[in-house]
Length: 293
Image 1 (tube, rainbow, N blue to C red):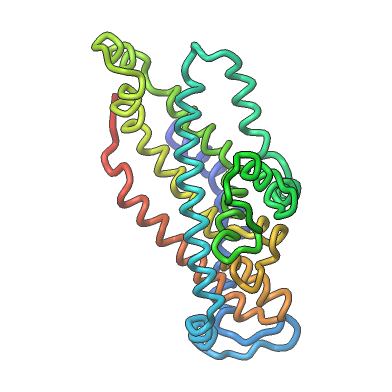
Image 2: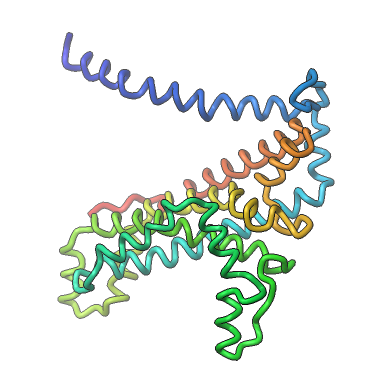
């Protein structure tokens, strides 16, 4: 066996099992979801083909449009908070003059490994209208911002989105920090010799060289926001009314509470398309030119 044949064999051995696993776990369920979205099915009796009726119903369902809007709000909060704060903290932690960097890197990642239920319960107590930490802080500062954060029509989804962003910010921090550490040190040394200020150095050197990392961070932040479920399930159960619905919660409600698996599959299919479109758009627009150094 030639070296080329050995290489091809090794490639097959390592890639085929992964591809099979991905196909069974991801591709097949997606295909089944699209297939079931064209049927009226309660999960028990034989399914009845109804064509595009589930999708037509979605377009006239107020819950669907609220869910779409909330998904975009969720994605926006995750992108701004996780990538913005993650970049600032990663730049700060990459500064060797800062003491206790290992402690801070560990502490920022702790929320990621905590259960979503635990984190949600923690923030429920913080947002509590009667004696919650947030309202208590505003009261102590003499600010008239106290309110019922999780039951307000205009605050509920933002409060839940911030909870999710806070919990998972550590993932973005690790990705951005690792990318910063891979940038050659001589670029920063040259900027220092030229007398460039600290933040201008990172604005002109660090940020442009993080293009590929930002692309991946954008994808996981946006798709993570669109797929959000656990936090609103625990914190508000989609309420009050439907003001904190997302497509995943709408899908859950239709399939597992109302027994409308076809309708839930249609909502899930829209979510898959939405995530796919955002992923394609980000890959087209972000970091199209690969920077070499």
